[in-house]
Image (cartoon, rainbow, N blue to C red; front, side, top):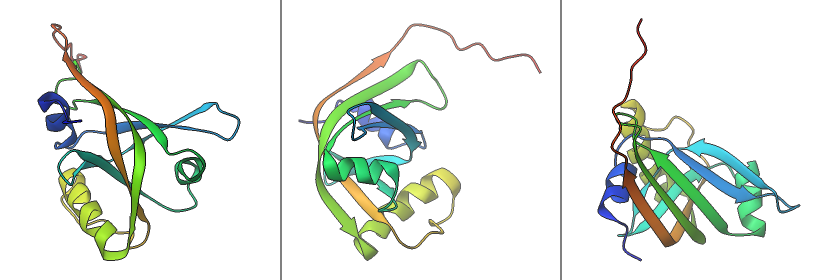
Length: 137
């Protein structure tokens, strides 16, 4: 599927993405990551091979993700997809460095891990008509 423009825009900015995978007993596991768009309409994130999400995806490649705009939290996106590729070495770090620079201004300091790439089956974007209230300092 083609990513909706609003969802693509959220994934191309320094927003945190919540990734949900399935634990061995079928219950959900959710964690925040940096994610981005690769290869046209695929979505990817980087992690260590022994992480809980990596082990979950090795057993069941289905994933759900949600993203909230850091600047305007009433802009949100979601997707469901499946793992189609894993990259290691320079191919993984090339993408991870782009994500790290986007979020921190620096290349990613950990120079090992895997990039998990997902084909998106369904996705959407919403912008709610609310005004963000900022707490008084």
